[in-house]
Image (tube, rainbow, N blue to C red; front, side, top):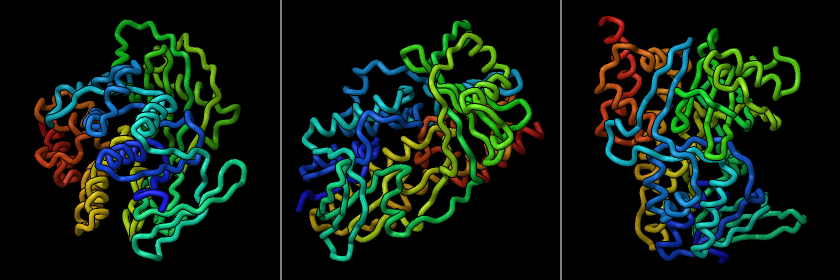
Length: 408
């Protein structure tokens, strides 16, 4: 066999899982479709990620890169600003993190795994997967030169992100419950000089006319920002012109962004992605498990993607370790149900964001400090903290809080 575990994808979940498994004494090989560094969105980390990187002994390498410090999130709507300081959250744990150009960040994580002795084979596209023989998983890949190769291992982890390799090959995909949306985004030289702008927080701004349209502004440590807008699927069809100019025009419709970006240089072509929300019938099967976005992706609004990815790795690794040692594993309870608990919390808040309920709570002037601290924990990524009342029956809690504020 080529390895104990084959991992598809060298992104955050794949690299974290690979290094943790290597630390446990297993032979791991990563097969990555792209050549790193490569562009990716999802650039504003949540503090919960820090614990996962710490567990994988990757945090020192990340800290050494000097990424932009992040301690919270700011929201803008109709000229009103509100902020959530992650150090004031309800849950224990990290209260700060980083905002990162993913091309650089993902390369740091992948290099850390490789330095620990995990081979990474780049430019390997997976064509087929065979799990018909228990304990003998097989993958077929083709490289950039058209050379095919057969790979074998006792276990496969799919960390392919939006590539969703095993869901496609094994017919595991199922429609998302979330409405289809489209994101338009770029990197800019922001040239922001306004004194009250806090580079230590992501800015999430809401369109002045359409509450379901929102923007992100993620500052980096090099004077640049990631700027994006998320719209209903057909909204951009009515906008003609080059994508970057369309993005700039839409951004300047929001007063806070127009103020901040008045001197910005829009020097990079814009990209777009749609239909990104996805789900699967199951997160595991005979000798395989799906990590991160390969299993389910909700929405970029609360920057939960990398957190869910790393959480999935942290849950899967000890189960893979036990399975490889011949011990029993209940993947349904210990992985799927455990991971989906937090995903469902995020889902409740995403749905409430788009229908306007959570936006009302965020901008509530008489917001209770205790409630804000609990919400802050969700925004910081602690969606699996069962001690936080806001993670229990989340949809009902959102309704109850909203009703309390409306009657106050």
